[in-house]
Length: 345
Image (cartoon, rainbow, N blue to C red; front, side, top):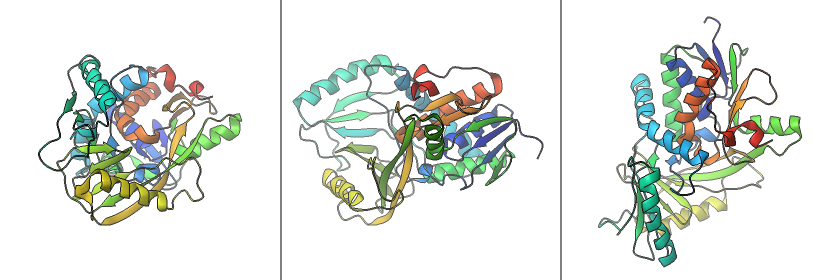
């Protein structure tokens, strides 16, 4: 391989997406990760690509909105190149409305969504559908949005890795960084920043999820009792996740996941009795600002950082890839102020 134009350190969803966008701009790229593609938080099972509520608009919500709209084309191109489905589908989402106050708020958001989502997606209050694929709702109403999508995180990383290799990208477990260097190293990268700056830049937050043997591949995802319930195209349904700032073992599942599964089955009785076929746990990188960290690396002059996907990394990935490729290759800096490293330092 000739000297690469770009080296991406980290083969999670941010690293792989940035590498893909750099390749599409004509750059030669190598990706280095000692653990291989999708080995950390990006190798999970849930895959809920869901927007923030359509109100109090800000840079983070606008960025996420644009990324969710980009996702269909992004993943279609990846799948066409790799021959591997990432499990993407914009199937929408249903959420229960618990009471009259929440119903009033949800109807107000119908109006703000028309403006903020520019007619490209819908947020609306509906009666439950006749089929039983819906969460229990005390008010008798649901919120339906058509911006939410789903994917299978592990399969998505596999698809991206294969697409990159098909375009001549080296995915290695070790090597010498050359060219423009972009650090997308997740929790390890945040911990390094915290040590070197002596600032609470960010940390790993544990999440646990599960896969059920329950097939509803064309159904919308559900969000009930703070739990994501995501039907995948392969005949499984994912449930997650916990948010644990304190933990003894980052990769062990325990009674907290049992509780999540029980709550999901209470919220959606149709799932009762479904067999649990996989339990998963991992650490997700969360910055102090709770927003992704994008831009010039605070520790390494002339290099770049893309970190802090936390719970929205897959939804943000298409736009993060584009913005970081433009920054590294063309010097075009359109990173939102709230995403810049100094926001967490």
